[in-house]
Image 1 (cartoon, rainbow, N blue to C red):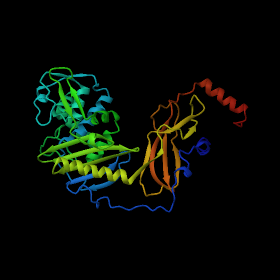
Image 2: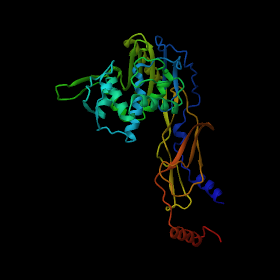
Image 3: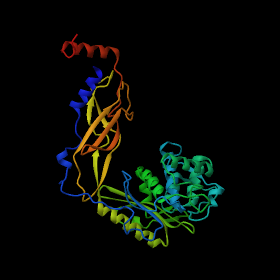
Image 4: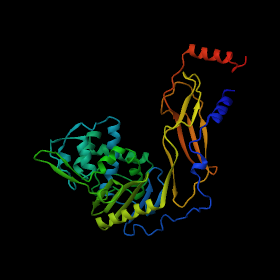
Length: 399
């Protein structure tokens, strides 16, 4: 009976997220069929890819799984490990780090850190994000993991967690080294994960700034990614260059609620990598639209949970769910199926209690985990007894 009651309750209480009449478009519009690898984009790049950020939908690719030297695009993974470590309180933005001899001796692009100097995590991160400082990323890596070797293990472990198969890191900065490689596809997935941390974009979007302000050792930072100044909506991410890697760029830009990520690898010149990246982004913004079909934390149903203190609690998606369409495509009829687990109080926000299946024209297009809108407390025995007695008196329970 209890299971049947839950099914009926979900059926009657289910609240549609979006009315079909609000989101459907004329059916006569035809889907466009495009070969993602047969477009005249990024002709000079050895490898390239363009994806929509929230879904990972590939809009264009060219040799996207070829293993190549990533140069300083390596720092995209380094920044991901760093920001995740900050969020886990391993280090804090305001912590002062004493620069090691190893970090101060790094070659390549740098912010000229001196052995024994102290600099905040925030400024070091800025040095990585804006100026691609090899010395800065090594200083942060040593602080987080104890050594660059241990930090690199963290990088490779995170790559496996993301399901990457074309990547192996040997250092946190990207200087050429045997067996250090990645692919355009893998770089786009790492970038997709990184841009979920919005604070990162506040750093990668800086065009110019200074370190050691108002001192005799003031250092001018200028972003190696010129698109953040010259391309509308561009706010990251990372350039790269070595003799082996050529000119590389992982870029991201946002316009009209659409965020794109592009990667070009092994370009001949910096101007070519910029122009081909611009063409990729222009193509994506001209072609696609992103539609929100389930909003994070929006109540989609109210349910009763066994032994809970209150009578009902709202059920919400754990994240936004978006779908990508070409602008010439129509959106079919959107419907939702709610599947709940058998759970008991207490339940905390974030705990998974079921799934929402989103359908387009009766075909499942996406699934998202569900949680509760607020912590659910377990009712005291007296409260349960009083509720049971009230339901008997009101005729809701027949004895």
